[in-house]
Image: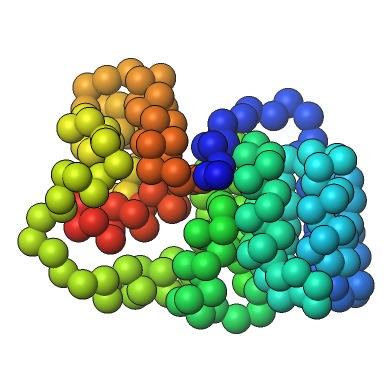
Amino acid sequence: MSALPAIPRQLSRPIRVMIVDDHDLFRTGLSSLLVARPEFEVIAQASGGRMAVRLASELRPDVILMDRSMPDIDGDEATREIVATHPGIRVLMLTVAIEETAVASAIRAGACGYLLKDAPIEEVYAAVRAAASGSPWLSARAATALLERVRRVDERPDPDPTELGGLSPREVEVLRLLARGQENSEIAAELGISSRTAKNHVSSILEKLGLSNRVQAAVYAAKHQLV
């Protein structure tokens, strides 16, 4: 079953974070850096994917920082299980290296972002904030890798309407703008509609296409030659 789209949230309390990594030193170090900021609360740590799935169901964190490589089940599989059951939980994938296939796999699994483990801590803070508010986040290198993969998709002259999941013409317009990186307010201004209407269109697009987040929608749009 495809996960329903997560609803962007404006949080007036600390962002509840769970950190998943099989290396104790990295996990505890990252936790210390996060809790040093009052806007973040680390509610749990997990040393493996199975523990992450269980704790996610019990504690319902806002954001999970998920290691991609773990000895029991990997980050992709853990993310897939968590997002399918709890679509409101946002997962940021952590990795030591960027590979096109790895980035694409994480996004397909339902991750809303992809970060390198050696990213500056300010970038981690920004990514967690973005995830909690419902926005996707890709490190610059992850975005480059993903775009390179998308560019190699076989060329098609025009998208076949029958392959667009029953999207209305207006939803196709919204999808094009979303894929160009525009936020709901920018889409609304471009199309002369309200921000609420733009938000509703985005939610409808994700549901019709069986996608979890805007990054997946952007990849879908590129594959179908909409951008």
